[in-house]
Length: 252
Image 1 (cartoon, helix red, strand yellow):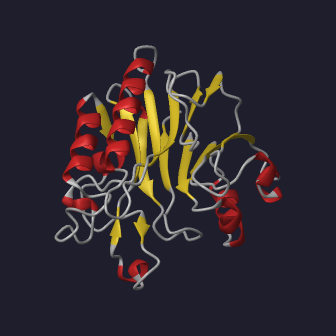
Image 2 (tube, rainbow, N blue to C red):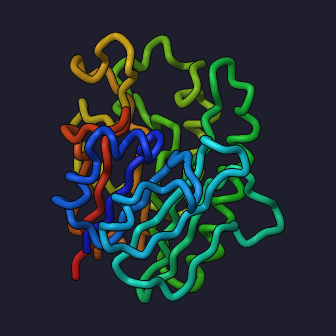
């Protein structure tokens, strides 16, 4: 089974930038997208023609945030909350239940320049960790998306000087460590120990051409599920967004 995850930075713009060809060639069983910036009525027709069942959790604010799941197989269940009463006006999370695992698609908050949303981000992380732990009591959990954090120095081209920048603060990195400490595995780092691999590059300063990037996009799995994972990849050469898609291969 192939699961592809991609922060598309606006699905309509991404379609114009040619992502349909990538989705067709990858032919993933499940495609999870973040920052789709669209609702059901504004999903491009080209997405409908791919032949997937479509699930979208859009933000109340038009043209902002949002998540979308495309699946060839109808999930056992589908939800858009974290099992609590907190509302999600930004459309950040989806959960699809399959026979052998729960699959969470999440667009984690960006702390933003000057860190005005740092506290919100940390609280979001605590909520989603509690939710993950509750699900894994029933079956393994796979969670993917744009986590908006470079966890370790190896996950960012220029760690020095970025310590107080959104996505690399000690608070965000410690929060990611806390998530992993509950028995979750960063699948890409499990299979690939070498530096120099990233999933996001600024549009400025030719950052992608110079590979001045950050690894912000992850697949985490319950530690009792890692034996089912064949590989975890970053499709670094695939364009269409400022993020590269990431991919999880699960043994059949």
